[in-house]
Image 1 (cartoon, helix red, strand yellow):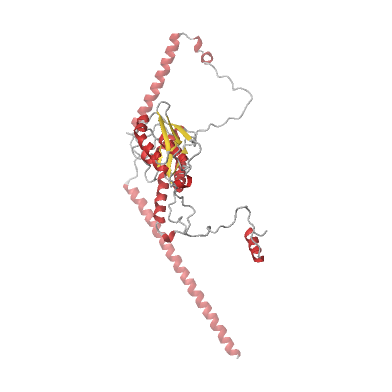
Image 2 (image 1 turned 60 degrees about the vertical axis):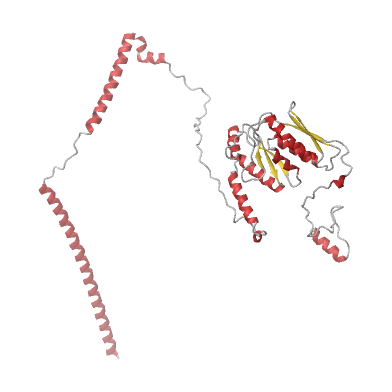
Length: 391
């Protein structure tokens, strides 16, 4: 089957207009204009919506009543926060004038209810930007997750976005979850509760942060390795010559080490039998077999004492044998010096005889080879003389 591009090319050659799948999927004059940045978000102009909002839109969220230290950004990853406990209602009450002033510029009203423990944002008649209420909703969501107010206010900018990453339901084991969650904390920071991670930044950055967090909780890769890759990519992006090349050769490749775990003890399965095992004899049965059951208490105690003495004597004999083994003299060589010298002389004579026999064998082989050579030369000379006489 011919592709759609080939079909459109053949139609263009015939002079007809090419067909498109969608009704409005037609080429626009500004599609190929290099001066237009299609991904740039234009700043909202109030003149675009002079009439304001027709109805009031409001959002509210609850916040916890416990807090501790003020949270700090995650090191090396911009706009990254762990939701940790900061000073409760008091912190929000102190920071609320800053939040209220930031929202007032966009014509958004906000309310802090300390009785119910909630924050509410709503549009007013002065509101012109219809999307600002969504940004205000994200602002109170970040404040409820203990992001400091000066940092959370940045979400009102068009270039800034946020993402709430849920990590509580990724793994079931609570101990593993707590250990892996500790990797996301910076130095000298701690958390008591927290099943979510709040991140702020561009869409591209949020995608990277989500990958870092999920890989950390799933134990795929440690955050340190991700941060190393991000730093290398940042340096490579500064070089325009590498803009259209693959960066795989520059990125480090980390191999996962498989730590050997203890093998679980498995019991060998015995062959199945439908009959129950035989009943073991009881203590009384054993006494009846040995005859102790009918003995008096004095005889029983005397028998036990006798067995104890026998065991003690056996152990004492064993210990005595071990002690005496250290004092047993080694076996001495009883041969006289004349006999030992004679044995050495015999050995040397045998070695000399072997050497002489080897020499005689070599000489005999040489003489045999010389005689063979003489015979061959003699036979050859006789044959040559006979041929001359015939001629």
